[in-house]
Image (cartoon, rainbow, N blue to C red; front, side, top):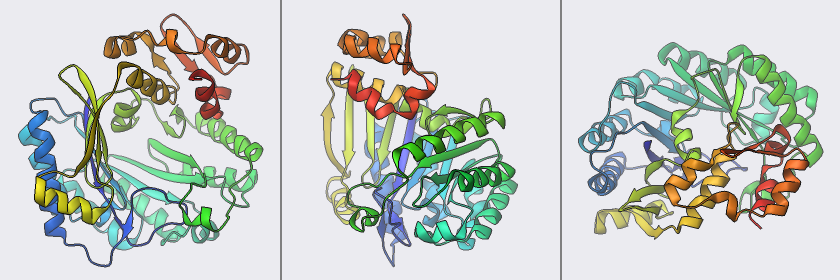
Amino acid sequence: MFALYIHWPFCLKKCPYCDFNSHVSAVVDQDRWRRALLQDLHHFGQQTRGRRLTSVFFGGGTPSLMEASTVAALLDRAGDYWQTDDTLEVTLEANPTSSEAAKFAAYKTAGINRLSIGVQSFDDRVLKQLGRQHAAAEARLAIAQAQAVFARTSFDLIYATPGQTRRHWRQQLDQALDLAGDHLSLYQLTIESGTAFHRDGVAAADGDLAADLYEDTQHRLAEAGLSAYEISNHARPGQACRHNLVYWQGGDYVGIGPGAHGRLRLAEQTVATHQIHNPDSWLRSVDRLGHGTAKRRTLTAQDRAEELLILGLRLTEGIDLAAIRERTGIALIDYLDAGQLTALKSGGYLVNTESRVTATADGLARLNAVIAKLLV
């Protein structure tokens, strides 16, 4: 598995819950950003030439503020370095404003074949609370427009928002299922340090309620044929987001654009790449050096094995111990806290066989705590 992530850092407005690398800018020099992204792509393309590209993901920020010509140029350039075919998954994140929805056909022409829409709620009160710029009616229209253009679509919702009840969330799920295609992403609100919500003392739903909302989500979507394949992501059979599976299953990926990360197997070692976070600083670096990389770090075998554990346990299928040993040379099971592993299995949070470690439904609902105990 080999993937490309392209980060577009600009938004029209910073949402108060968002801790992603997103920045508000009234004017963006689209031509300069196109040139810089192409140059950064060239930098990594030369190092990984000839690999088979399985997915491309345009994330942000708000990538639907990117000109379709930039999308087309990047996808064309990717074909100069890597093998591509008709199975390539190319996803772009979009916001459901009318101005962006009108671009959907242009994005398809440019090479996008999967659209992910940031809906977040079908309740105008909650949308206002979350600082979103669209109304619920716009979201419904954008979903319909996207489904008319793209064979594969998804949209996001956020739950455990301030004041939310189980009844309200169940109503939201019902509306989502009425509109859903083959994929949904349902994220629990967490208040991250540095966000406006954190500064303002806004509180998400408490732990017990959040756990109830998570369980309601799993049950309702499973009944509808959209079972979870990862903690926050649900799909019909064969419709999982292939790009995100590259991350969770430990594949290689190039990350370009401000703040993007990458993981590359080079000369029998895994190298972690980190792009410069600030957009202006990133641009200056690309102009001066030909790339926007802040640092490259060679991961130790144990670092990589633990990373694969943390990522892989998010999947409902769990982690393949033999695959981790093949990639790292480490028998991961020997590095885990044996007493905690036994306790977590006895408590019903993990299932461990000779070949796999898998989190149960209860374990997935408490995964951060489970991992913290395993890696003591």
